[in-house]
Length: 121
Image (cartoon, rainbow, N blue to C red; front, side):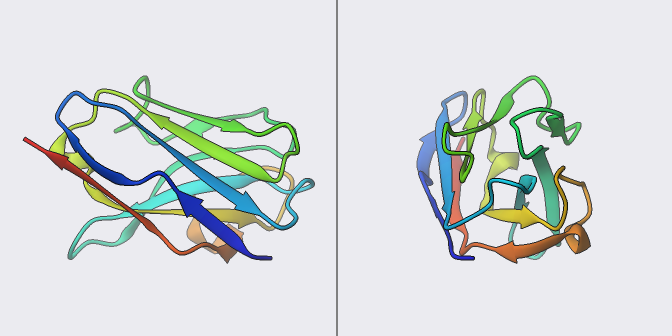
């Protein structure tokens, strides 16, 4: 399963970005987004079920970020609003082993190359 993430870039505090990720096949799997800041571990951001339901968010992004599935279900997007410098990281999309996403990295079997998000103060 190949994953391709896009949409990263440089934005000012308070701005918005939309990340997208396309998988060759993931229509029966949950998908998720993780992020890794310099010198830190890769942390959970958000996940969503195979049918676009059951979204789950990390507390740090809840009410600011929205995860969604594309019509073909092989794509997942992350709308990020009210960005702060603490959101600066490389963002990774991943395909879950099962029909629903998870907060745990070990529940994901395929990972895309990350896309860098930089939020300036």
